[in-house]
Image 1: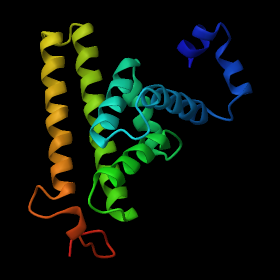
Image 2: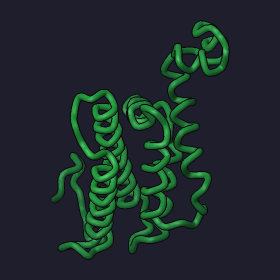
Image 3: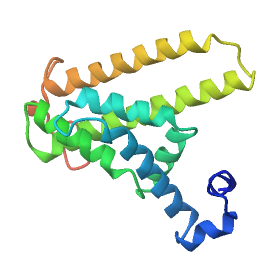
Length: 177
């Protein structure tokens, strides 16, 4: 909060004039991070582009992944990321139903948030000298791993795996029948 207030040239307590709580303020910051990343992506872009745009937005902001994942955990902000992934899955997928697209969007969002969190923590550890790493090389490797992960999730959702999203059935407890 001190860093945000300092950037605005105000006292930290003044932030709460506009927000009810620290969580509400962080939710607004998370929404801004996500919006900044998704604004550059055409509304009809495929799910692969949306996932990469979200990852890039998270990595552009210091602690961006931590902020967004924290608000997601409390269901307070950054809902546009899930919505854009879900809509792209509906366009790209073979099943327009809400359930499979919802599950796919949640899976991709969690993967993207987790991946970006790990990348940001590694980069911060390297900056602090906690680990010695070729940051540029590691960043390229992590980006390739992210791309491979998104493709693997999409293959599973679109039927390139053993079964398609259309064939998935779940029981009431969410486990595969």
